[in-house]
Amino acid sequence: MNIIVCIKQVPDTTEIKIDPVKGTLIREGVPSIMNPDDKGGLELALQLKDQYGANVTVISMGPPQADVMLREAYAMGVDRAILLSDRKFAGADTLATSYALSGLCRMLDYDLIIAGRQAIDGDTAQVGPELAEHLGLPQITYVADIKLMDNGHLQVRKENEDSVQVLEVEGKCLLTVLASAVKPRYMSVSGIVEAYDKEVEVWSADKIDVDENLLGLKGSPTKVFQSFPKALKAPGEVHEVSEEEAVELIVNKLKEKHII
Amino acid sequence: MDFSYSKTEQLFLQMIRSFAENEVKPLAAEVDEQERFPLETVEKMGKLGLMGIPVPKQYGGAGGTVQMYIMAVEELSRVCATTGVVLSAHTSLCMAPIMEHGTEEQKMKYLPKLASGEWIGAFGLTEPNAGTDAAMQQTTAVDAGDKWILNGSKIFITNASYANVFIVMAMTDKSKGTKGISAFIVEKGMPGFSIGKKELKMGIRGSATCELIFENCEVPKENLLGALGKGFSIAMKTLDGGRIGIASQALGIAQGAMDETVKYTKERKQFGKAIAKFQNTQFQMADLKTKVEAARLLVRSAAWKKDMGLPYTADAAMAKLFAAETAMEVTTKAVQFHGGYGYTREYPVERMMRDAKITEIYEGTSEVQRMVIAGHLFK
Image 1 (cartoon, chains in turn purple, green):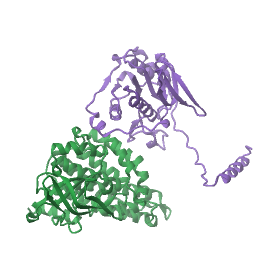
Image 2 (tube, helix red, strand yellow):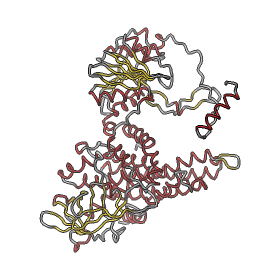
Image 3 (cartoon, chains in turn orange, green):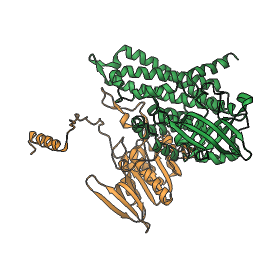
Image 4 (cartoon, helix red, strand yellow):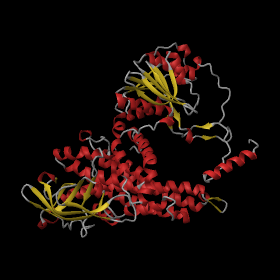
């Protein structure tokens, strides 16, 4: 089985601070990490490799600095790493990004594409599903577990907010994975020692099957109107009480607010 | 001159910090409180290759550097000094002498299982009457034709009750003094070998520190490590390497106490403001931070020399001396900054202060380090 995993380098938003005057994110000095949902996806791909044998290729679109994240993927156990990096991709929104990635995927031999549900910097959750549309693939989102069945189909556990679905899928497909579903493995020491001896292939726009007019800013219909940080909610109240007392407390609060 | 971490080291640091934070730190208080050897952590470390960092790939290791290994000891000790010393004794005191003095057969037999963490390693030099004066060995090894017969005992042996392989020093010819000491590879379960009482310690309470007892212990002929009569020299070289490990452990403890104190003094308010805002706090912490960074440079420089194959005996002694004394000073002041809370087990600085003390004592006391440094200075 050949698996492509889409990964993105993002600023570690848990370390991001907000400029108190401008109200914008201060990105300077903030470490870059592999997007958590993507890392979850990579872990599920590596588990398939461990259990059934698979060839795992990670792909990413971004600036040359994303190299370190692809080295991390090598140290976790992937077989191949490709970075799409070209000025022509600059300014891409989710549509232009997913289009570029689809051009790369068409050049590769694959049975399954795994992406993270969403990136912690943009929070759109669009690139995975759009990539599936560009490639004409069936897709399952919010995936927490993947198993290979005896008939060669995949059995996929999809965790919605309020329900769980177990689905069977036949043939090529795209899955988007949740970080919360799986604990990603650590890089191994020998993987780290070898990571910089391996090749991270850097592909430019002319190497993939795309119409250049649909790349980068030119191919991006989304116009950013305004950016602002999420308003912080007031801290909640924490009460450490027994279950009975908790019920009474909640009921009283609801009555207080005239909800019941 | 380049003081930066290599790309490989940066990747390693990312991994070991995350491992220490998520797998080791949550157990640290419990391991100390219950005096419990963190076996589950050692198993996880084995799977990731952390138990064989500087061991070459052909012997089942990760093929990393001494620098990476000491970074691991530092980062583990930053959250749990017990876990740090388990790795240090295993790597520096057991695998290193096999790598440096073992025959090809010995390396092939022992290193793969040690490097994978399936086996844990230990080292036996200290005896009741041979501490700093290590030449006063009373354990004997007698040539009995097809085997060696060992008699005597060793004390304060780190990892002892969990170890499978021990590097043991014994007198093979009393008349020759230190040149009559030889090194042996002893396995758990060899006839006549047993583990004695476990020490109840002030700090690093999760590490299993026990006595080794040899009563007509039969060791195969091929388990002599290095040449006959070279045991003292092997022990001293092994301790040179071990000191870089303990220096890193001390550095990690100091850094851990700094981390805790910065966090606490920013949160703790007295007289209407965070105590980090007081100049007394700031000046004292600035001095401590400077010492921690100086210790880090000494440790990294000693490890670099070992990686480069340069002489490093005095460097290792200076690194250990300075890092250990810095750890003691930082942790003592960290408790002071925490006030009454710092004296309770609710905050980790209490444990860190207890853990720091041993770094001034084992693998050569601070006094021994000064002897080594002065020996090089006035030779």
